[in-house]
Structures are given as C-alpha cells and as structure tokens.
Length: 482
Image (tube, rainbow, N blue to C red; front, side, top):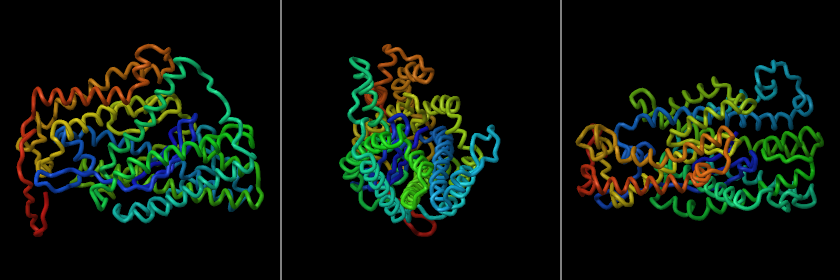
C-alpha cells in the first residue's frame, strides 16, 4: 500500500513499502498563475485548468477522480488510526498493546486497530468544518511536528544501533541492463510522483498570496526535502534492522514494534510523541489531499447541491463504509483492480507494492497542459470563457470536447498499457513493452505534448490565438466577477 502523505504546504511521507516510500516535508505555498489577456494575473482551480484544454464537458474527470479520493482517504485514515493506536499504547501500556482480539479472522482487522480507527475519525470529522483558507497555521504546526518526529527517530536509531547499519553498505542485487533499467524506472517514478502532485495542485494554489509563491518551493524546497527525507528513511531502516533483525520500512510498524519490544518509560514517552507527529501528519493529509480536494471535485460535478464541505463529508462516509483495513490486510486483488482503474484517471497515486505505477496516465495530461499553455496559447487565457457553457466559449471546442487533447492523451497512454498489464500480472520479462513502461512518465509526457501541439497547429480551434480584453461582469450584489 502506498503510505504517501502529501498536502499543500506540507508533506510527510512514510518510507514504507519495498523501499518505494519516503518521508517528505515541504513547507511550500503553491500558486497557479495565468496571464490574462488584459496583462494581469489570475488564478484557477484544477477543474478549470483541465477544462481549458479538455473542453467544457469534461465531467467524466469529475466523476472518476472522487472515486480514488474515497479510496485514498480510507487508506490514510486507517494509518491515522494506527497513530492513535501508538498513542494509546504509550498511555495505557501493555493492556492496550496486548488487547485480546474479539473480532473474527474474516474481519481482517483486530479490535485495538478498529477502536483506534474510529477514535481517529471522531477527531478528524469535526476538522472538516475549518475553511480551507484558514488551514495554513495548522499545516505549519503539522509540518514542525512531523519534521521533528522524523529527525528524532533518525537520531535515536543511529544512536541505538551505534551507526547506520549494514544496509547502506550492501551492494546491488542486480547488474548490467537489469540494474540500469531499474534505475531509470526509479528515477521516472520519483519524477512522476512529484509532477503528478503539481498537476492537481491548483485546487490549493488559488489561495496563495502572490503569483510566484510556488516557484521557490517547486525548484528548491521540494527537491531538497525529497532527497533529505529519502536518505533519512534509508538510514532509519538500516539502523533499526541492526536493532530488531528485520527491515521495517513502514514508520507506523516500526513504532508499534518498539512498543512491543520495550515497555520502559523512555520507550513509552518516545512512542507517544512519535504517535502525535504521525497523527498531525495524517490529519493534514486526510483534510487537504483527500477531503478538501475531493470535495472540490464533487462540487465541480454537482455545484447546485454540493459544496466543498458537503463533498468532504460524503467522501468521508464512503471511505469508512469501504472498510479500508481490507486495503492493508488483503491488498493483492484489490490493488490489482485499483491500479487498473487508476490507469484511466487524470489523478491517482501509485497504489501497489508491486513495481507498478498509476503516474503514467498523468504524464500525457501534464504534457497536454504544458503544450496548450506555453506552445499553443502562449500563456494567454480567456478567463471569462471558462464560465461560458456553450459554443460561444473558446473552450467549447466540438460539442464541449477537445478531440485534439483526447487524441494526444490516448496516443501517449496506449503504448504503455501492455507493459503496465505485464507488471500487474507479474509476467514482465524485459521485453520492449516492459522497457517502454520503465520510461512511462517521460514517454507519455513527450508524446502527448508533441501530438497536441501538432494537431493544434494543423487544425486550430476557435479563438485559439485571438486576443481580447478581460471584461468582468457585475453580479446582482454589485461585486465584480469573471
């Protein structure tokens, strides 16, 4: 399961999962900036960004994305429950840690984990009442807590193991072309994960104060913290393997193991504060990345009846009803289906412990977005046309759909499907399809970017290069609007 914790302004990433996960702390503020035709700057949300090159009738995206938001919310809420389990284990001690499981094996969850999960939900649900624009301070506090937790665990592990352990000195188990292709795959996976987060960040960039607020974070802070936290995860895993004789990639499992091995006052105090750090991280993740972002998606789907807050509550109810502990205890069949479903989504996380990724569907989408904004429209948007739902809009294209974008997306995606299926089925053999999938993000990005630009040049859309002034309209309350 993917234990990736990312949210606007803050990230806390579990290093668990066959070496593919990492900690990440990025105190950055993003901003999605577009140059209006009157020379001023404007901001836009994720669905408006997608609408400008996919067409006004792009509701299939609004229908699909909340599905994965529900699944991710349930999964991360489960890990939030594990942070509560750590805290209660530190406070109550062996009575809670060794609590007898009264649930049948078919439940796929133990009693203490289920209790902890619903305690987490009781804490989490009221937090959805906080307006998104007022979350900056809580996110900063969460960032300080999870950063402190990470470095505290690192210092403890290195001291307790009297060094970094043997893992960092162990050579590669692969050689030759196998090692080279695995290296390429790892690089594109990291790049794709970061880039896919940037693709949907405009849900939050609209709240930034300045147009260039994202540049420093994206160019410096995020890459730096990704590298630092990946190193911390490796050092902690290597050191704790010396202590406990097993590689504990998952930070939650590491802290729970500490509680099971030691009940000393120092261990209980340390695990308590670690649990608090994990709790703050999971709260921020569930609120920002899943609920609020998913609530925005649902509001775009049915704005007459659903706002961001109502959408968040709906997603939470579905996430709990899905029994998310099954994602962790019985992942094989579920992950296979989820990964295949994620192929067709514009935003979805890598969901498997296998060498599979759902980032490659986003690479064509990212390529199209960059091609449309920089190459086709020359960084100029008709903001008012985003709110026109008929053929008068520059983004109506052909009956609400931009066939150029759909063609480029499919062409950037379909060559990757054979390799993706082979990875899911475990039948990869190093064929050309498999190696093409190893280059999935770079391939999809470049192919879609090139095809979309070529189609737009060969068959330009209406108002594609026209220039007109931005004319705000007056609402009935007298305020200006696009």
